[in-house]
Length: 126
Image 1 (cartoon, rainbow, N blue to C red):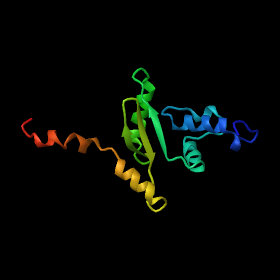
Image 2 (cartoon, one colour; image 1 turned 45 degrees about the horizontal axis):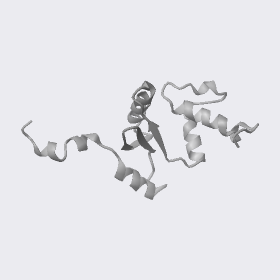
Image 3 (spheres, rainbow, N blue to C red; image 1 turned 135 degrees about the vertical axis):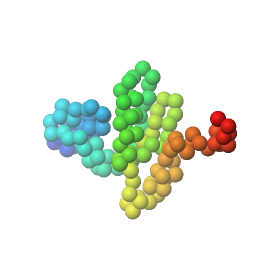
Image 4 (cartoon, rainbow, N blue to C red; image 1 turned 180 degrees about the vertical axis):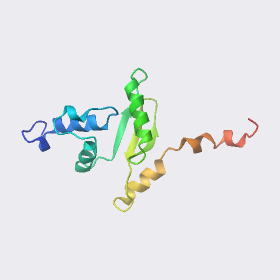
């Protein structure tokens, strides 16, 4: 339900809690009973595996959020980047979901490897 008297069933409240607890500098306390880890409960309940982060050149908060997810490698794995968005998957336990864990690991972005492979790695004169 989009609205329900019981807070646990109220999707509007759940969405607000999740957004505020994910956002760096977010204030989950603006929603009564919120905590910084509320996003985990929502993701677990609805089996959400990843987030797509919008990156707009005029919105500094998008890049602050990108930096936050990049630094939170205990919870997030960067798997894709495009001109307007980045995709982060939750860290997955291979015992819990081996197929998803293989997918996440095979799509993990490692810019150190990308920077030193191909033509740049072969050209050692620089």
